[in-house]
Length: 97
Image (cartoon, rainbow, N blue to C red; front, side, top):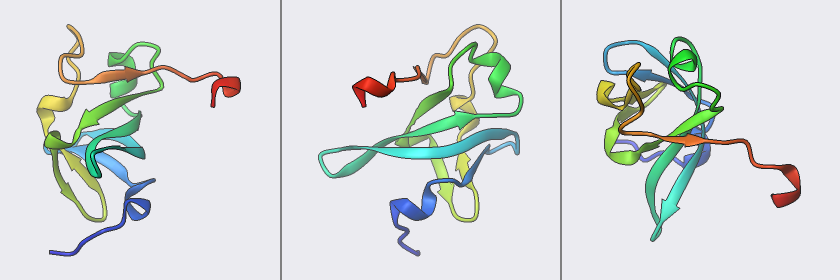
């Protein structure tokens, strides 16, 4: 098993375990010095499912593998009925950053 730095993961293309393009990894959310979740800028067919959101936060428990690409569990994929397993990411105004 190869240990990866978080900086190596940022920018990877994210796919579901069924092969659907999900988006691109933007950042990792840390809690108590552990990865809690991943912010992913959505792309492909996911854009229409998340409405106007720029991206989503995927809990780390939905990550299946990280290598040349980022693989997440298909259950993390939003359905047309809603987003049960994800949190929408709204754009933060620059004056608050």
